[in-house]
Length: 359
Image (cartoon, rainbow, N blue to C red):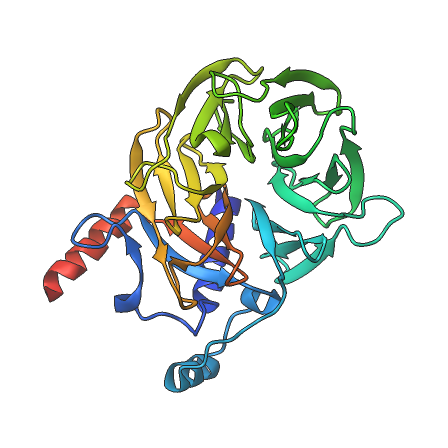
């Protein structure tokens, strides 16, 4: 418990110190929903490069505030997937053909999947992380799931050309005993499906085919595993989320194409949190929506932005939620990972009381 508390405090300190453009004043903080409603999430920072992990000095903060300077970095070219656990954030880049690990403990960024002879990434897309911080990458270019340790050292691969046409999404249970891979097939393929492996890489089941029925898929892109073992698949071409048991039995689905809250227009990322809630990014809405396990909309966060500002998105893609409730969202146009934090109830009540005083 003490270990987790110290890590959370360290993350909060680093994230607060590294917010784009300097530390935000309390009155400028972005909450969802906005007071006077009880805030549930707050924007914390943007991850762009190794500089994002190093606290900014008081002098720099003052200089940034006076000048309006916004520090720009060029680590990414086209970030896609993101995964996070225990102070480590893994991001894939499909153009640079590599992955990056943001390590909050060491305040460093590591690159992986670049050198061989094995483990070189060709077109890395979805990424997942287990409780040991092993990193699982769905590589469409090599047609396999590549597995690395917490520092990015290659361990092994799962699957082959017989298993996949286009592996694009991957999820793993916390203990690493089950690996779930999305095979997106293609326009002329019927192999739109979920493939299940054990922790050693032995194939256990193939779920689904191309179609619109229960347990069928049309261009699925992402998969996520909830703490209770429920497996959620982002069935993008059918504009819905499908839920399965750990062994691949269909449970339920929700979603439809539309422009209203709770609908899906261009879904591009999927994650679950510690309570089993489901997070979906949408490139048409420029936000992410949070659903409970039954598919009821709880909250939407973010909005369209033509400028690179906190809480505004141009092209959101991958999303991840770590064990402390921090949410990480990829923006492919602004080349960053926006970080949001869940607001504890006591803190939320304090914020509401402060807002009431100044109204």
